[in-house]
Image (cartoon, rainbow, N blue to C red; front, side, top):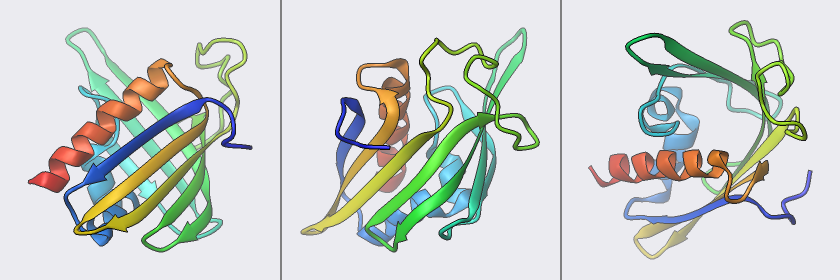
Amino acid sequence: MSDNQNWARVERSFDAPIDAVWNMWTDPAMFQKWYGPMGMTVPVAEMDVKVGGTRKIAMEMVRPDRTMTMWFTGVYKEITPMTRLVYTEAMCDADGNVMSPAQMGMPEGTPDITEVIVELREDGDKTAMTMVHVGVPAGSPGEGGWAQAIDKLAEMLAA
């Protein structure tokens, strides 16, 4: 996969040290607290953060009439502690079996597997972050969800 196309991209500066931001991405308990769009929680975050390690995440939205749960799985491809994290992401069932986008009601052309690239760098007493989600188009609802999640991340780091 290439990050040369017009993929979802979020750039943010956090008033927090780089290790605090890194931990938000790599500690399952911390990840659960901020990940996902507004209104969604993360009841499951299984993350074996090592190259070749797997991840399984559940995002959940509770409504009066029903609970909607979305599952994602992936593999960590690249880890440079404190500065770079690359993992794949695919929709799956609760057991971690990959499901096609069509099975999940996604539009035709949605890729089966996407890739998330997180880069961090120290910027004085702040941390600059660039997150690219290869396979999720810029301007899409997926990019909007990321923007909301990163807003939640910023709020946690500012607390």
